Length: 293
Image (tube, rainbow, N blue to C red):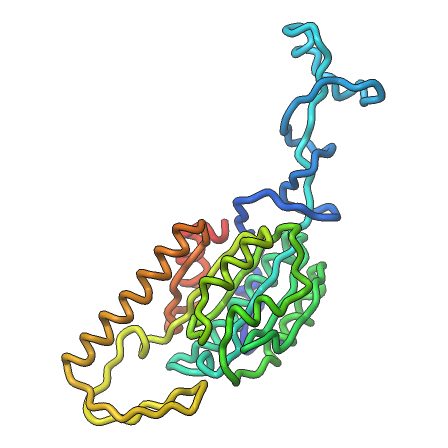
């Protein structure tokens, strides 16, 4: 089960990690994350004045000695987070050496494992120009293998429309949560509106941008016919050093724009080369940027 994506030895290493959410989470059941709700867990949050009927055990007598007024302690309640993993399964993801789609599926499986190991609820969405497949929210570590089978079974094809796909996920509510997008960002309707929409729904957004080495550093020359894998566009070109320089300039502008947008919106962003190993991506890239801890 799942040997093509993650092996048991690697999964054991993941047991020491957790997704690192900056925001407090609203949720319905007990879990490992801090909620905005005030409850009875051991972590202190705030004070408020005593109201008749409050539990006497929560009165802060030190505060009474200082102010001669009764205050009760409020504590941060632990809740589950709703974590939604959006996996781009359009045709452009099934490309590159090593293949972008393989790494993307591995990353989706890693995030599912981390979520379940930390008692969160997680859902997985396959995205094309609309939600193409959906595994509803589930919890419990025993569900990992079912989720892994679902991820392995996702087929690549069709076009990318991130905004249409994200807005088509009607199960997302304005109750907060974490949304993780794994995509190459080659979307006909762009990416900014999709990310803004998720933030409108009070999601903390993590953007995992997967690109192949052939896209980042093309090593081509001569006469070529370029075919759009998500459409019918065909272009004959003669690759010259000047043309490759122009490509690199456009690519750098594209990546700089993404980074600047994500920084301005407080969105977690990481660019991942599909030639990277899972150990490098998880235990270096994601940990360095604080995605996991």
